[in-house]
Image 1 (tube, rainbow, N blue to C red):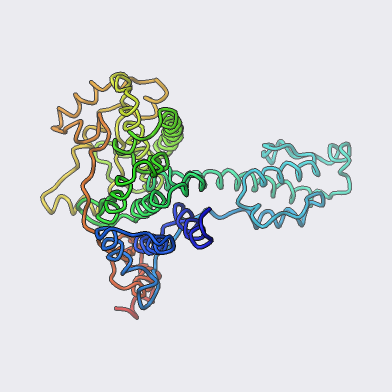
Image 2 (cartoon, helix red, strand yellow):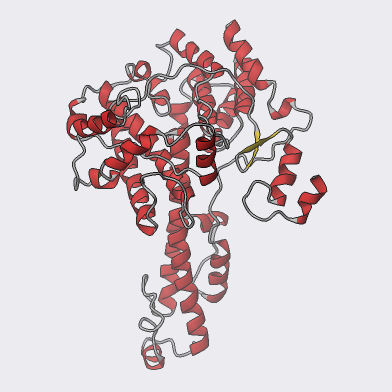
Length: 457
């Protein structure tokens, strides 16, 4: 059994898997964890952790970041539940978190509907309402028409709210999957089975959760010198490392080789499920507002947030799925079934920046435009064998293996650690206090700046 201090730190690191803590702050927690265990760190790991933790909030004079340290949560139905409780006498007192639980919200709607003779899903105001005679026959004559209509409208709005909440919760989970793979779904018992494994998982997840920067170049790589130092500790003690837990976030061949076929198959099933869920989200986004497929540049009316979150989740799930197939020796599946990557939408100003600096559309965009839709491929409506993907890559001078079109992603080399920037709509700002002021003033948002901006310019 770990000591209470070690247990607390492991719990904090596990909680960070669903948050957006800065990698520097996770590195500081890892330092504390090793100190609590009296671990003798090698020089490289100690130096790497110290380099990152130097910029943690606890070591900065202001101890403040302007950026949210969690993924945005959808607004729950607390207000609607409170109103329902005041109108329907049969409803019991609800726990504080009921407004964020779709199952409890649905149960309330169904139970409240019984008071006015309404079944779940009866939302047509002109057809599904009971008239006076029907209310009398059902024993609701004591409820006036006005009060009946008020209750009917509330339950109808609550069903709409419930559908929106479920959709937004799903989007949040998809966003976390795209950024941090299956870290958010990792059980504590598996995560905490080995402290060094937990440290690596928490740090690499924090790096994955970092926000994108407004740039016309590549985004910052996840695997840096700190992650490499923590991974070297796993290599040094393979018999102690919980490789199954690590495989949830880091599908490197060296990691998967240590995982049992049973656990690999379980992960493959999980990623299959993610691919299908994300494909549905992509299809829904496309059908609501078709995109400019040949360029993938944002146009007015495009829901770029939903598409980009789903695209990132698809590519993450696809990369893990490919790596697991290769480790399980099932390469031949890709000969028949090789769904392509999905590009993110690019803002028009970034596309213009690319052109002005001598660049252009990424070659992957041309390959994507020639392949069948991923949701059609998953449903078996269109064929997308490896040969089709290779032919599209050849036409556009893309290496299908190095570009991860027909194979898992190449192993990334560690990059140097750089401190996390304060971002205002993707633009790096040196000071977090200045970043807060610029954000509240609407600077870099593409919208009209408020008067508060004048005070800082």
